[in-house]
Length: 193
Image (tube, rainbow, N blue to C red; front, top):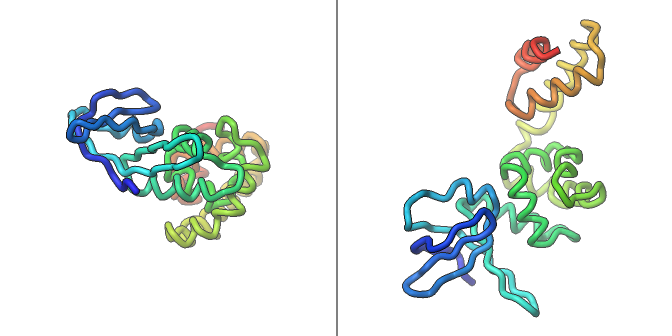
């Protein structure tokens, strides 16, 4: 119903903003990701999603269309409400959530406060195919991504490093640089081990 709001920023907190649009103040719930992207200027534009329930009409705002679309995808999962979806977008960058879903990385999704194992698994089960199609992740996420991690781990084990320590080092490297080559992962892991 309300696709976006453009107006003067009246109030701003990490969880919500008030935008004055020609004399009408709209209270808009935001994620920390959107909060970090808000400009310092008074005039802002947020893409919005209006959730209508029996007892409330709640407006959610996003600095980027992509974040709004991810929010809608998360809401489509049984057991994930608007509060949980907003927490997810506040805890991790949208790109990180998308990659984690595409990779089937339950651990990353479960690391978000309030997300249990079953919910994390449901999010991945329900959204993996949609995310792979929508964000065209097949090349990145499929074999290549996991193969690099596995090859690097295998090489470090052959070199005599403890598997658990090597896994931790590799996870950290891949988190910081998801497209790292096998050589890059091994070289950085050797520095950290």
